[in-house]
Length: 303
Image (tube, rainbow, N blue to C red; front, side, top):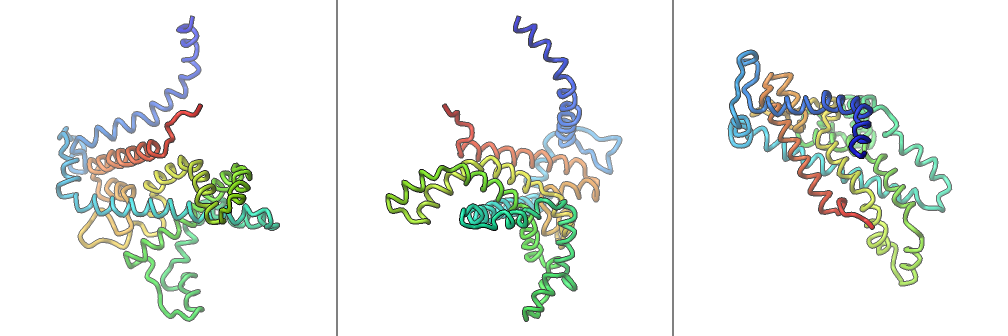
């Protein structure tokens, strides 16, 4: 009887299962297969399987000086962007959660603007603000008496700083809302008990607020890290991966793995290498996510 009931469900599940297979599984399988071939602009019709040669080339061969520097910057970019957005959102959420702040709803409406704006428009606006000659940020510095044009787009260090600033600005409203929800779920009984025991505000934050809010928001922080790890749009629309590296034709100083993979595909037609990069990105992000969810206790069952 149970098998018959299960069989009745398959026609209803079929559209979703077929869509997942066509849209998700087939591209993944195709990408993995390409990573084991020499399919590129020189072998479009006569490509062949070459085993793990592409992986050897990326990890220990001629592409090693592309992969590892870009990987290091990608990890730094994702970590700083994620935790920068999270702690900025947490601080603002604590301030806005103050019951004595009458105008908190107005501040929430203003602070949520970066999240409400279409990301493309916001990024293009930042591109103008970061212009070295007539951008709003450098003009503001001149008004404050700082007669120095920060080379936001031409210097490697400042370009990376600019990318992180934009990413944190775009990400903090989401984290602020997440933390506000977590703060409002904490019972006042904990704080009353802590105050009776003589705990200071910092001790209450350290022992009650932060642990409870962070535990609730860990899955969202992990998903935000994965999104930042593959945040192609922000990088490409602001700097296009620049400034360029003299010793590297595939990646600039602000390119992350996702944008490097895109350039390998569209600029250099190295499809086999871009497929290899894609598989490695999947393995890195998947491993990191599983490890974090395991160590943070997200897989533990709750009675």
